[in-house]
Amino acid sequence: MSEPTIAQKSPYPVAVEASKTYYWCACGRSAKQPFCDGSHKGTEFTPVKSEATESKTAYFCGCKHSANKPFCDGTHAKL
Image (cartoon, rainbow, N blue to C red; front, side, top):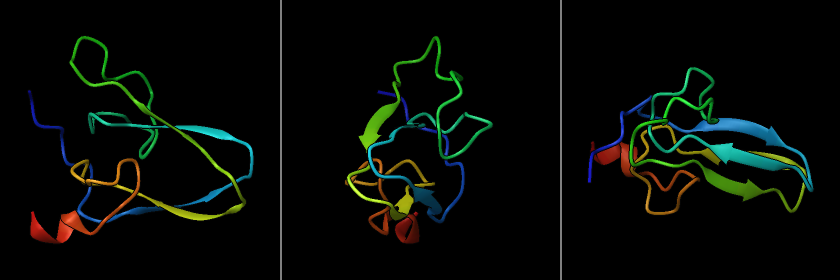
C-alpha cells in the first residue's frame, strides 16, 4: 500500500455541526484540506466519512497517519 502525502504536521481544527457529514481526505492530495476534493481518483485511497454527533471543534488529522482516522492522535509529532 502507498503512503499518503503529509498535508501538514499538525491537526486541522474545524467547527463541525451536529448531524452534518464530512469526508476527510485520506490521500493528502486534496486542495481543500482536511476534506476530500476528489484528488484521490486513480489511487488506492478513499475518503473517510465522519458524521458529527454534536456541534464542536473537531481536530482532523493533517499528517494522514493517525490510528484514529479521521481525527488527530498526535502521530504527527513522531514523523
